[in-house]
Length: 317
Image 1 (cartoon, rainbow, N blue to C red):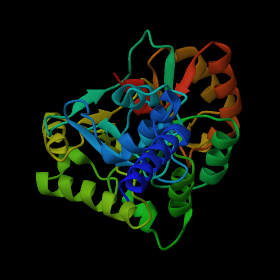
Image 2: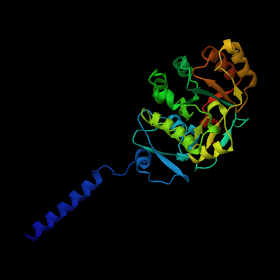
Image 3: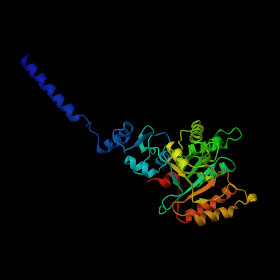
Image 4: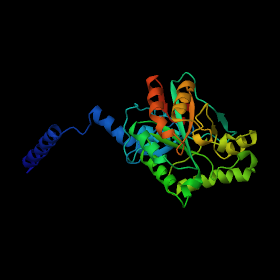
């Protein structure tokens, strides 16, 4: 009996040794570990982000540039915030860090970006005349032109046209190209308003957008008719609109030729002769002759080596 017990014990040891020797290693290769970190560390936020960063839940179709436009910054900034290459393709379910909106303060008046940047921001206001807004948006998409759109809340809620809602839908579907800024609700003279009225104009515009989109307009505000004073900058800044976006090239495309407005050739000439690095160009989605002028504007600026970007990208650190 004792001999049999010894033989059984020896047999068990041999079997145990064989199991260990023949079993595949449970340790992943370095590349597998990198993949695990790639797919699990980001969603679990098992790391510290930059000071003041917020987290963004990646949605299907999100790219670094689309995420950047939601936060009015550049893809480079999003990549740097997360220690990722610019070629990185975010995966739905991940969380990425993004710069937090600036703390409420007096809004900064911006007429242009860095002059040495080699970048120009094309901006389009929308709030009155709606034609040829959709043609302009489709041209920008077809030609891969990034731009910033400043919309009024009233054009989104208008019962007479759905052009504002269509433009908002186009922006939503092309976040790699477009970002959205606040242009007030009813396009009033802001210096003539009380602080409460200014805040209401901003808030009701964002509320109109919220019916159809998760896009936030803050911190970008464009005052109607470019009217501002120090009180306006203080009030809109405290409301979270810390960048009041003006321009240094005004096409005056809102005025028809019959009222002394520019021809197509005059719009093209004005932009190409006056735009320089850091310029912010003012146009309108309902501008007269704007659609006809755009091909020569875009080609002319690109031929001169300028990169066409959103305002957020132009101002990003």
